[in-house]
Image 1 (spheres, rainbow, N blue to C red):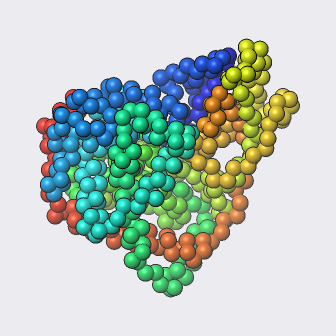
Image 2 (image 1 turned 120 degrees about the horizontal axis):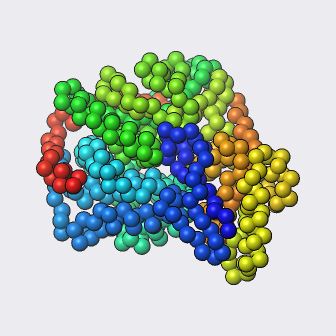
Image 3 (image 1 turned 180 degrees about the vertical axis):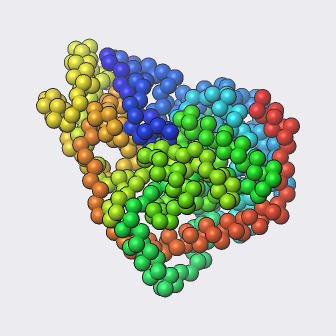
Length: 467
């Protein structure tokens, strides 16, 4: 039976490549058995990726995320709170996992130092949250895990089953996710205590109306702060290491969430729309060269360095493509099961081969295969990847169904409709104002906190981790 292309992590997964570039054929489905190559990035391959990562990164006598090990050693301390080699390795494992990447030891070594530096800031935020007695938001953790599973094309149940098969407890995994979204939990607590006046909302409404009338960019950024001197050199080295990871196909939002040093920088898959007249000149020069789905090279800023990913563009008075409505044709084919025969397999081979050669919507409709017209509004990352792959190639995309076993889904892009942009209502404007205040007030407070913190990085032990 013919091979079926599995859509890779697309929108955020390969920011240096055009969204929807044709992906290599990676999954071979034959009869009732499925053979998956090392290049497979489908979410259903989470377990095999994790097994490979763990087998190559054994720590002591235990290899699974969150497990105890007899070979703990400290690589950094933050106000006396240890960050161990296991903490660093576990964080690195998840970067590979959430990017759908098989382990590459050279890439792994390049991210250890940036991860340690990012983890010192993460640990400071944990201490800050504890000081303010901000409780953990378990509902937010559950929501984030659901997003990760959906973006990998699998159900939450399937995702967690794969995690548990490696000996990872639910608590250990949830704690890791909780640390990743802690900044948003702090921001939520800040929002509950923040007042926004009617005058501020009125001014925000005026600004929003002006912004809608101009071209707008949807950006995610990875920030590398520096305070001058040697700190600047370290920030630049980290930026170069991270850019190499992105060029290597790592998921941009995962890298931003793990390694960035800023509240608004794409953490928790958060990004921001910004009007053309509000874009910083150095950033504008970079993004004008980009198409959606591409990321910039390293950009020098007053505070250090950044890497920006252009996620979407909205024309004057229109919403962006990611907020548009996507019309597609969708077909579904069974390739296994107790009633599936070799004769059925031959017929399916013939059908899929005919579909593979289609190059227009009209051709697809004339094939004589059953299909339905589907309209997606705000598709998740996994769905968007498939849609954009078809849009870019002008051909159908075939992939293993994320919700049905022994099933191939086929989609054909028809059109995207970008409707009229609307001024946000007062509640949305208030949320935006609170977010801006948080970004300003928290980051100022955090900078002061960091100057008084006792942060020690054990360079010798860090080298041991990187060996």
